[in-house]
Length: 343
Image (cartoon, rainbow, N blue to C red; front, side, top):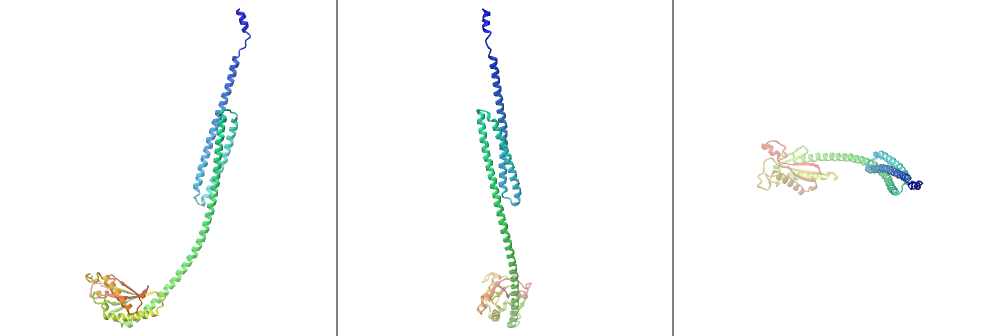
């Protein structure tokens, strides 16, 4: 019986070793495919990282180009060099994109999740390509702006040249006018000096060489005592007679000096250095000297002299012509001066 049973089981086939071999082969294929996928993912991540670095460098160079727009023409050479570098970087990026596309095509046989990731990679590459295209547009815009800046600089230089030519011509005209003005002023001064000499000569004849009327430099000097009582600004009768003679000489002068010469008789009041009490009309010697000069001017106007040819000024005790406190020095400093001068 036992022998008959073993003879019945003898011809049965054993499938287990073949099944094990098939499973092992399938496992090896799966492991191989996973290895290929992992390697592809690693290389793709490396390439994408390099691509991001290139794009980041590109953005940085574009920002540097924007700042360089404010430089003068001397920086144009550096800008062109940077543009060349940027174009080279873009060409390198295009080569990298082609290589990545080749890797994507090589991994296209993977199924399932591999296809989805490859599609995502293709989308990212498309986005990066659009970014590169935008960068090229910015570079083109920068080139247009540089050209516009060059045109503006050329226009400004042309305007500056025209302005410099006009300025040179204007300076020449101003110099010529200055020379003419100096010549005219010198002629007026000479004419006025001649009339001053004639005027002083006429005054010497009219005023009969009085000791209290004298010529000092370019001034005709009246001692105050000849015209005013002590501490007063009212002209006394003797002084009125002498001023009437002076008015006659000034009227003769008005008749002979041409109207285009601007001249005046300046009447200067001076006092000695003895202080005024301040209890009367005048608070100081300055007030007294000014009031006396104004009184003389008003009297000459009453005699017919034109107000346009008269000026009154008071100097108080601050312009002495004699030093010391002697009676003679004090008397010389109390005076009314008449000066023919330009207006």
